[in-house]
Image (cartoon, rainbow, N blue to C red; front, side, top):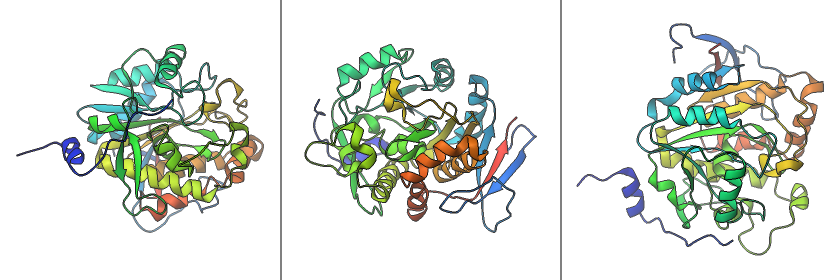
Length: 348
């Protein structure tokens, strides 16, 4: 009897855990604009280094608009089929730097049978409960399509193959209802992770609010420290490792049916979870990237930040390094989640 991948996973011992508490050829004009391999501490520029071995393709445009986002998607969407989860960070109420709704709407309408997916938060903010989360979605304008809060009905455990800290992680239970995932990420800083890219979007953003997110943060029991103290939490490298464990679970689940788009605009040192208190961005907008390789797109995004003049990148670089955020890249390398050598291919 033939069964779907979702049904197989459901039958393979995954357990529901209860309701949460409160870039290829560009139409004949492929253009390689950079090839880089940055060291673990980041790259001072995006150069034209020739290195042995294969390179992942990362497509790039300096234009940040709906048409360009659709063009990027067209370069990498071969594995997207069936019911599609569009994972993005929808933000706290009235967040000033979240992704433009019209641009996201244009992409969502371009992807058949797609829904925005999110999960509730671990901290007591606007999206802590499902009811509060849905109100926040309305306020922020994410009401133009279905939005699935994946842990609304609880969680499901995904295995972490070769995990260092986690052997399984609890994701929003509705994840297994999807055949493919498009990870649309606002690349910016992050209070604890240093930067928030595609890895953070799935590692924390797909984990269930009161179980999976605690597993990733290393606080399975007891009260979380207040938000204002998170920057001082003694996690650093371990948090990056746990994020990589969690992100690998989602990447392994979807296999070739997960792709990544990073939007490098309005890059505050703070995450969209900071809402209206997020610091004003001091680095200029850079553009948008797309890849089927999560490590390649993360490495390219970091390299592009580090290629900016020091006066522009200073604040975001300081945030990244003070939180050991670059260790996200090493943790992904260690888990063989992708290729840090890439070709940056302009579609402009």
